Image (cartoon, rainbow, N blue to C red):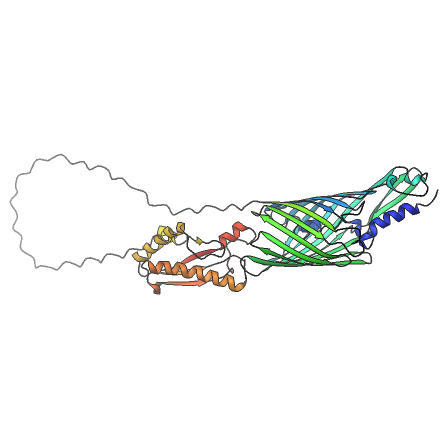
Length: 470
């Protein structure tokens, strides 16, 4: 039987458009900045209270017949602070080659102290490759190698690790850490395919320039055998809603990305990969679109219970006694007068003391909108109640402490927290509380009452608290 020289040449020609055949064994997504789980199983359940799902489609090298087309689905969820589970599915097709992989993943979080942790992940699954040679153009159509299609299946595996410190993240993953292969045969033809070990490293940092503008630089490195490829990216975000980014990939060229977020639930991503110099004459580039969903379960807080008021005692009705007959008058005895003695002075009445109910009033905290220091109308009644208590007890003093969430630079966060405390102090002064009895300080974001991981928790941290000094 003749060697399959022409079929091999055609297959290599299609796959070789990306600089090396082996590099295309794992389909490449350009929106990994948003869907990190796609490139590292350790990201499964990264947010312990959220379920994340992403579905995407990639069309490569538009204008080239038989160019790869990829569809993927990723879903993962956290179960408590330490465990994360997920699953991923990828379908990758060309004219003659179709590939499918399905994986389940698990990750475990290890805390390293305040604001830092390590996650370790592993993924296991199946990898199937099918080759339909009926579409091949060869010199000898009677060659057995093109009579029908062939396919084979093998196991897929991946390990990964991610280190996180505050807003910095770096991770390494090894797809096909244990190289596997599978055999196939069609008629008299036998063959074998396998997946080579890959190596991927990724890092990013979220940098807040102000309350509404964020920058996110990131880098990605991929290695298969002796082939290396690097990505450098920069993404800018306005008001946590719209993001625009650009990147550069070696051996490919420029990348452009667009991301839209809606109410912290939906994310729509688009990436465009400019055609490299080796195919620019044939293709207008590659496109990728992705839709993501995030569902987070807020932590339930125990409602604050005010101190119980003293029970109301209803006095019993007074019943007048029946009249008794007047006794006969008894002659008064003669009593010698004793010297007059001055009565003892009565004790002075005690000053009123602060009750537990009144102390509880100062445990109410006032919250603010993002970037705002104005006191909303719904909190003014609480402030008025505090002012009335301060007027009843002139010896009391009050410390007002302002806080912010983690958005913005250190200067912005310090200024907004101080301004919030000063505005509350000014309100009390304008309503009759002496300036010497109230102090105000700004603590920036140094004392959060909730982790700054969701919008709801960030809103709780934008507050003013009160410390009563008796």
